[in-house]
Image 1 (cartoon, one colour):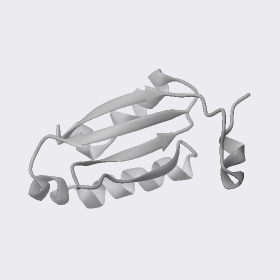
Image 2 (tube, rainbow, N blue to C red):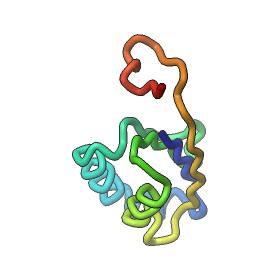
Image 3 (spheres, rainbow, N blue to C red):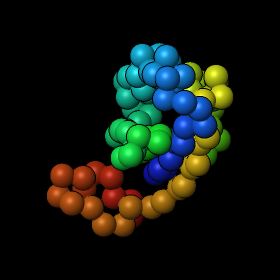
Length: 96
């Protein structure tokens, strides 16, 4: 599993100008099963994506399709982790 931390590198006006396209991109990735959760950071300096893709190379290719990435609006930090404990509603995320 991967945590993708997105940090905006431009003004929120520029981010907002591509927000609808970014949301379309996210919806496509959810339909493909690549993303399991996402949302804005508080304060609004970027966002977080949780992904269950098989490997880092695949995730990087997916991220390269994000309009925020294509238009250089943000930087992306990726951290892989292995969930060893989960709440009852998230037990399917646990890896043995």
